Image (cartoon, rainbow, N blue to C red; front, side, top):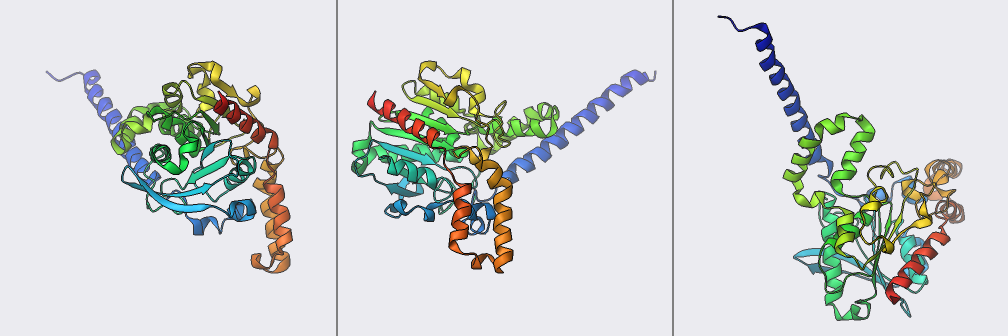
Length: 364
């Protein structure tokens, strides 16, 4: 007796679905493998990028010239560090930069502000960024390990003994996630406060958020294989969330700062801000101004007008000057300085609020 056509269709459909699913699985595995199979930042490439050229970085802040630059080893990993010591320090801020940047990048403006506000500042180049030796970043979870190592190093060294109960964390984007998730570990003394500037919730949630933004519901279809591949490639650390860090450190005060126009860390899906209601002991939480700022990702701690200028007008002005004077090298320093001033105008209200937030945390 011949099988009915109805039952012949079933295995064919099953095979087709399985084939499509397997194809997605392989493609997703390859994509994830290649996604971070490179350095997070390269100084030579950044120095040739117009956006790097028109924003103030380390060399534009004379107060940062007096620093200690050195390597340290913790947990068998070598890290490249920078220490700025204030004359009469209120405490120590461990500052973590964003993905694609480095300690001497635009985050140097934060180091300069807080140093001049009497906070000592400690920075490192996160994995495969700036002067770090690693050739491959591997995954966003690498930054968490960097911060864990740095906190333990600081708490063991006699030089930083005065800061043991005055340590505060500050991070931007990848750095914000890293300083937040690092709180999931136990330390000799828990940091007093953490501030997230445009931080994402976890590597898994951030990548899924971007996938949904790009392809919509297909992202939900591939999520099981995405999770399996991510676990295979990076292990459970890729699923560690910022909120897990906060909830493991209930005495650490938390401030979140997020932009509504951020295309990189979406405020309604991937950002820590979106998950703020999961933070336990909410009395220690401050969402800056209680609302999203009208800013994009790259200009979160700058004044409102900076974002549009930095994204569009600034590069055009810089190129026009290069055309006018025959080359970029021929542009007068005062002309470049003016562009940098407009592309790097700090939001002093925000930074002052962060300083006060840290001060209250250290005093409590």
